[in-house]
Amino acid sequence: MSACLLGIKCCWDGKSKPCKRAISLFKKGGIIPVCPEQLGGLSTPRPPQEIQKNGRILNKDGKDVTKSFKRGARETLKLAKLFGAKEFVGKSKSPSCGFGKVYDGSFSGKLINGNGVTSALLQKRGIKIKTEKDL
Image 1 (spheres, rainbow, N blue to C red):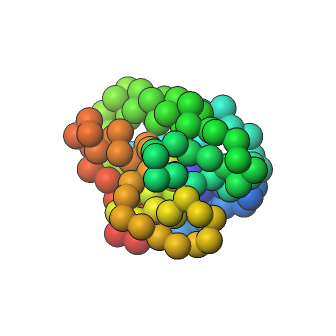
Image 2 (cartoon, rainbow, N blue to C red; image 1 turned 60 degrees about the vertical axis):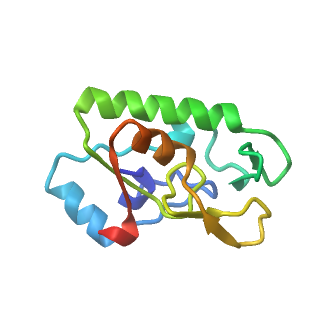
């Protein structure tokens, strides 16, 4: 599960996005919190990042952070395999964890159909993907 949903301050802005339902599920056990962006080596806080039309991930300052996103996705997959995870609950709209809709790359708040880097990789490996909106 995206760690930010559990109140861990790992979002791009140094804040969290606590979700009462996610926290309730966590308290029952069996959930591993992850932040793929931190696992990929990005700092917290960090500039906002969005997936571009060419598939690269740029931050708002124009820096290409694609390698960090891919590294974080691979590290999250390693954890999922290690713990036998069957499902991942990611933060909606995130360029890492989003599923179904992500920001369009213009930093204007516009959403498009798509998946974050980590959610796409996990889904490709047979892990069911949800967001906090599905809980």
